[in-house]
Image (cartoon, rainbow, N blue to C red; front, side, top):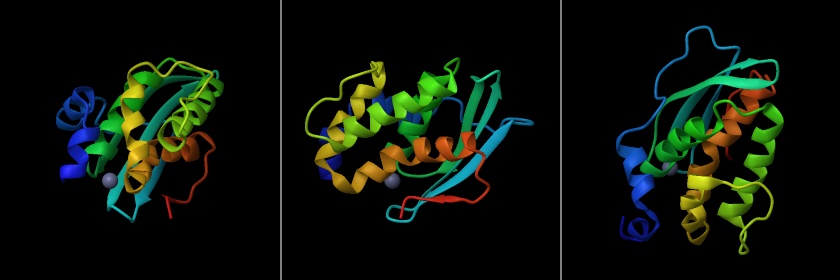
Length: 148
Ligand code: ZN
């Protein structure tokens, strides 16, 4: 676990210990399941979308600290955003955790705490699982998402 200490910023630790929006939504307009076999993370993302805007967003699952914190911070950040905003944020977040240079474009706010993940390629899938799963939910794909 020593490699993880560097990447655990306080905000990530806080969210992994006390995940926000960690509950099932009753009657969500869409949902999807995701699985990261590399680490064993499993997640279900629920969303209520009305007029192209995310009214409510939650998740359930069992995973490592990074995947839990990422799901928690994602749900907190994206409530009230339009589906188009979510796609732009996902692209920027993905660039943040995979590319050398800081991504340009939309501001990620607190989500920038995940920048350290790019030093740990094994953890990239943990950090992006919730996002891939939300994307699948928004696109209403029925099949479960796997990061493999
Ligand atoms: Zn993980």
